Length: 250
Image (cartoon, rainbow, N blue to C red):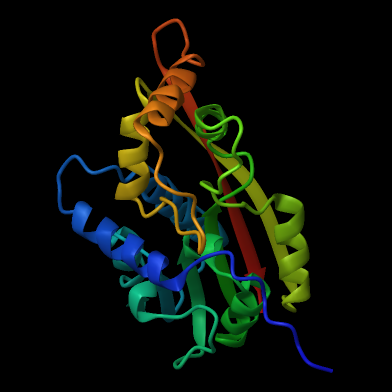
């Protein structure tokens, strides 16, 4: 019986381009870094709580160096990014005592397969920790995109995984013990354009294989107006990034 390939939701070339563009944009002192900064702080706190000091670690998708620098205090660290690494293929090195993935699994086509490969790259009792922007995120942006073209359902935003699905995926990948939890990052915006810039800074922009056409000028103005309609009394639209953290032991 032939094995059906996973649906092609995301374009690998667009994923690589988004990461490369984000790395370039991160050179600017005012580039947005709040998602990765919060995720790294959270991962370090979890490692400290479990008193884990892994001798050999793999860090995937880190735009900065904070997590890698922390891990290098106690062991060796291999650091890779998706423009030179394919999460949907087996790892070519390992085993690792700890593997961290910062955000990139949100845009792979074969997420079950990627988790299997990561588990296979762990040493016995090794730990995988994955953080990604999950379901429930960017509700105001989603509403603005719908308002921009109310009579045309163009694909503009990524489907996102929720806690229940993530739990099932870790079980399917064969992790011995696993935990999935969710926590928010809330950020205030005074306009749609700044939000879009922040998403590009952090490689969170559109990476769909078949994205919708560019918004017309009129549609863009409708989107901006719809976004600001949700502002609070101080003129800020508070967007919520729902961060999923997947933790699994081999």
